[in-house]
Length: 294
Image 1 (cartoon, rainbow, N blue to C red):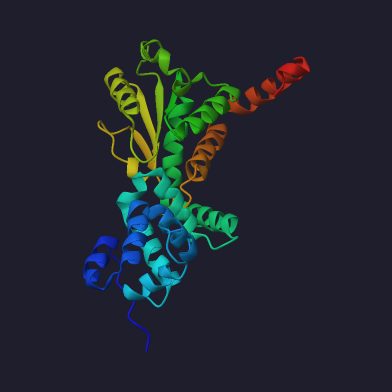
Image 2: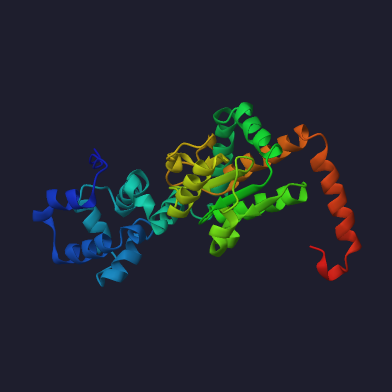
C-alpha cells in the first residue's frame, strides 16, 4: 500500500513534522529548497542534489523521509504550494515559475494557449454588451480623450490612443507623457474623458489621475482586472474582467479584446466618423514618402 501523500501546506511545516528523521544531506538539500522555493518547484531531484553538493540519490531519499513515494511526487507538492499560495503571485518571478510548473515538458506554448482560450471564453459572459456601449458612448461624445496605463498596461494605453487618433478622435496617451502630467490635465473639463487601465493594483499615478478627473468633472472610464477593481472615487463606468487564475498567463489578451470591442462598437454608433477618418488616414499615409509610412 502506498503512503498517503502529505496534504498541501508550507514546506516549513513538513520539515518540522519530520525533523527527527532528517540527515545531514537532507539538511543541505532543504537549505537549498527553502532559500529558493521557486527554483525548487521547477528542478528535478538530480539538479537539486547537484546544487546542494550531495549524491544524486539524496533528493529521492529526502522525499521518501518526508512521506512521498519519490522525488517527482515531492516536486508536485512543491508546485502545488507555489500555484495555490496567492501571496506568491505579487512576485513576478513566482508568477513566471507557476506558469512553468503548469506546463508539461515541451508543452509551454500549448499551456499558454489553453490558458488564453479559457480566459477569453469566460469573458463571453463576464462583460455584458451594455458595459461596452457605456464606454463607446462616452468616447463618442468626448471633447478630448486621455488614456492612461502604467506597467504592462502602458503598451495597451499607447495602442488605444493610436487607434482612437486614426478614428478621428482627439486622444492622448498620458503614459507616454508623464513628465507633462500637469500640462496635459490642466485644462481637463466635464466635456473630456479619462480612460484608466490598471492591472493588479492602481498605481499612485493612476489614482492621482482618477482624483483629478473626478474633481474636474470629467467622465472616468476604468478597464481593470479583478485585483485592481477598487478605485476611490469610483469611476463613472468600469469594466472589470479576470486575466486568468494564479499560475495562468495573465496576459494583455483579455483587456486588449475588450478595448477592441469598445473601439469597434464606437465605429458603429458615431455616424460614420471612424470609417471616414480611417479612409482619410489611409489616403494621407499613402501620399507620404515611403520612409514615413508605418
